[in-house]
Image (tube, rainbow, N blue to C red; front, side, top):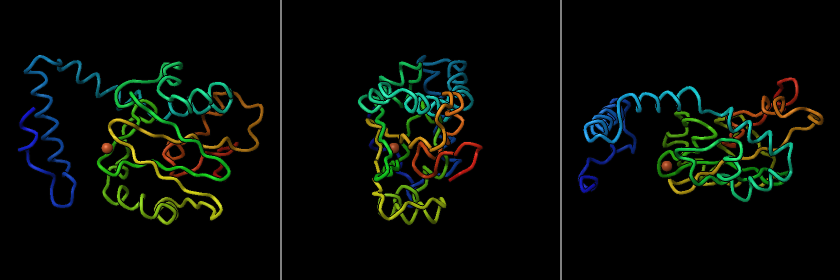
Length: 213
Ligand code: FE
């Protein structure tokens, strides 16, 4: 599209208002329908899927499998998109996913400094704060301080914090550590412990009984 170069750039603050975004979405939708690329029904269905059906519960399911099945975990870390597909998880904005593993010595966090790239198939649509300039700029510079001040998540000094910058080509997400005291739990039970924030790296998983550590 040649109009891309001449289209107005985002406002000085680098973000569009809700109204501007809504207007652009409407314009794009109208164009897709007019050009016969998509029908109104198809667009409605797609919006519904990403609003109601695709969400962190899918990332939780993949995580619980990785906690329960070492061979699956190995495949997940080697090729997340392929491993997720084994569980029927995949699709738009998840064509090239990379999973980074938390350990006793490394804590991972994901961000998209450029815009808001996010692994939709396992997390659904990104929360608003993920798209905000404050998160995108500070998380790369002061991750430890931001985790503590904005998310109440304390990373011990002895643990290295790694920040992964997603792009439209590569979308990262975090495999949190399996909490202690969960031996013998089923995959369904384990999945209940996985929070959205733990998959982003800004929060922890729940411990058995629903407690945060
Ligand atoms: Fe982005």
